[in-house]
Length: 154
Image (tube, rainbow, N blue to C red; front, side, top):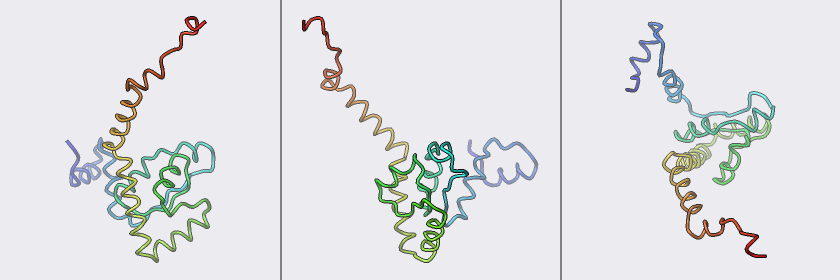
């Protein structure tokens, strides 16, 4: 059973271990209007191996964000034409200023992120994998992947 908000707050107040510790993280989204996804460091690890979970979380809620072009994000962001990708802190700061000042940009960013969230949803990913697997296992594809008997051709 999922944790209710009151149970979560009560467990924290009583010092009870919270096995649903993620709830606090998700509850925090209620007060977020704009987000920034930026690397903790500029190492290959921080740039190349950032999981898409943070992007998916903000996207699923339509929270506009300014993001660094992480290797794991950039293809999706480019494919959907997401406008708020910054490579420097100066660019990010300018984009944040523009985002705060422009309701139209916030709306556009939010709509793009909701499209991205749909693309990253379990249902869509399952359907994509199912389609790819069916194509991979189709009789035509299997015929193309048959090993060639080089001895018989001699």
